[in-house]
Length: 356
Image 1 (cartoon, rainbow, N blue to C red):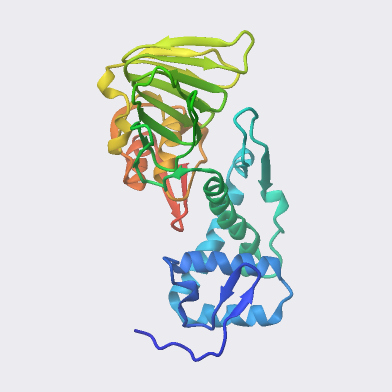
Image 2: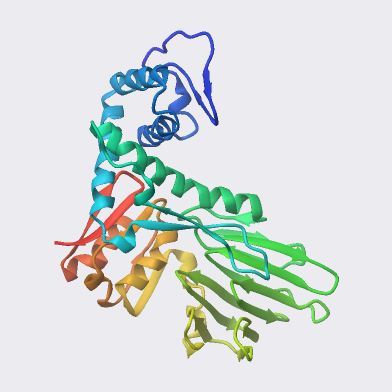
């Protein structure tokens, strides 16, 4: 165990607390050297002319070879992101949304990040800080609004007050609003499987974007993956309404039936074996004649960072198989390698899919 450097008091800088090098401020609570590097990057970008801050950073950088390695990986992140196609160089941050309005979005782009100047350090500051910020902010926003939330790669079952159960998929969140006349759930993010306690006097409604599913007693699945919202029924009956079209599109589903709704497209319907509804709960995800880009979209919640598809041609390839999304790095390699793709891992937070 390394000896700690003596100190008298921590240095508090805005929202972060920095202790002298060797103390656990940058390694406690699960902080890895990579996460500590991201925190330093945020601070350095906020105060680029703070000489004492730069001196403390230099001490941290020299203290452990892992710190220097983490900092170098941030520089590589800069290089890879800048080499991505233009449409992949921005990311939309979902803001809190009411049940009756679409979310407003704040936009971040590499154009807003300072260009590299004198050193590798200056090049890394803007983009890597933005990456850390982008990864953290959506989760923080959801935590403030959600009643129940799951983490990346986590499947969580919640029992509601009426005896109904909700199985949240990874990176998913819901708001629960129960009243005397109805039971309303808003899916803020991700996917959820519902087993509803029957109560005809209090209809059970789930709202996901512009789609509302209403049931009396049933088991069904609601998913928001990319821009597509889907509903599938394991047993019972569910009425699905697309509410932002005129006239309102509606369809009643029975066991094994599903619908998918994407912006600007008509409601797509189909059927599968009822026992296949909610298969994602095991982590072993069946992909049946789907584009690789769609499979990657479904994989994103299982990974604790970002996955960037940098080659459109690979994304259009069709695949069929069952993959263990609990190991997203390995599964992504199995998916893209047969089609000439490769997976580049940049820090624990970023996977880039490119052509060989």
